[in-house]
Image (cartoon, rainbow, N blue to C red; front, side):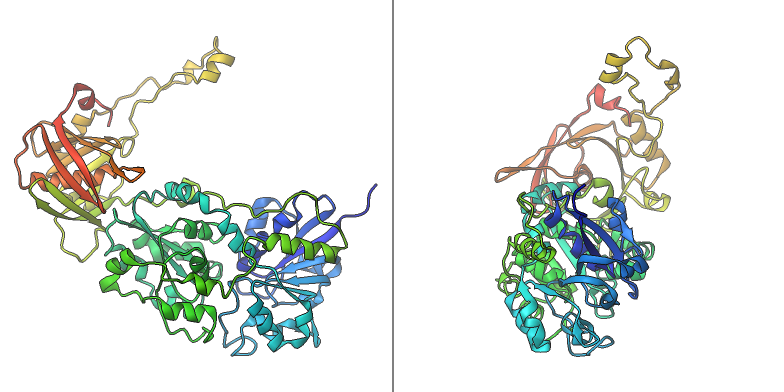
Length: 574
């Protein structure tokens, strides 16, 4: 029997601190000489769900009383607060943000960042941490200015979270595909926690932007600090954001998904939270969502960044977000992060030195961020729109906005089977996507290839539902026009490039949308947006088949052909 494994304890008092520690795990991968355990440090008002990510991974957690009673070879923490002095073992302290940019007036020394405040770094007058692993040399100097004895116990180790984000840059296209972004400009709003956060100071901003930014040109996403998730709760947070969520807002989960959004985004609207500096490190344009936070320390990298970028004004938001450029914001990130790409290697050497072990022979690298699953993060497609449309000959420019926008509109459009009755009653265009709004569609009951192979003589036909009926696309369009007298155009989306359309009482016809090439990419659009273009055009032109028009959707022109419907299209299941 070999020697007992080294005992490594991850001590977290909040979800934010825990997430930072989880990014360190690759340091110990492949090494059976190390045993990792987690514990929740009591005393934080943000400890709700703090260990959820650990539980989901199946890791072992120790009650605080057991963690205090045990000896540990190494203790890793990302917050100096709590009863860390009661734990026995070498402690390594990492920051849980992008440096030290905020001072909290109701904690410790009002003018000092809590991460540098001796009130939290000392226990009975002695430094609690054996090692301070900081992201930048300037942070070592700032620590030494407040706690001179810590200079000899501080190293520059880079930022494991930033390195993980940088390791994931090649996943940008995959993340945008999972989000359903397409050619749209992805605008990420970021809100830290507390009374000076973006959501506290401008709670209506997500919905207000959704009401002004056309759905087919912009996609909105929101990053909320884990502390705010803990304080507010996911239920109340979703309730408060419901108008923006119904308009297509993506709300990121507090672990990993926020970083995936930074990889995928085109511009970030931020307060003084750390996300702004991570965005700057990726050369993403940053726009200040609010300014003047008293928590922000003058002269810090965050303060310098926010003073150099434009401030978001709702009246000019579309222009500002469309034209936002990096504007050399990376230089501020370079004041907060050093040793880019080397953090885990640096930390592994230091941590194994404290353990008295030689590092594992396997290479260590940051784990790329997972691509968000569509079921978790893909936006809830809006069920209804207020549509602005301008027709110039055979060219129609379409902008789709939430139904509650106060901007003038051309018509309302609603999706049958998902929109509410009132939205359908007020819609001049009603469309249904194949598979929505009806549970009576035919299903294929052929056995799978595996069934044919493994059970070819015992096909389970007696479980098949033979009693079925369904409506054709032609029938559905006629029924919709009868059911909703205010509707002028009814349609069924047959595929990403074809719709069956019926205008007033006329015979159905087919709308076909051609793809558009943008450089080396092929762009497709939502067929429902093309339907709005055709609806607007038919309001000024009699239907004559075949016809061709151009739909301007977002910043792209699409060719739209109107042709007689085929028998197969008329009979297509709706």
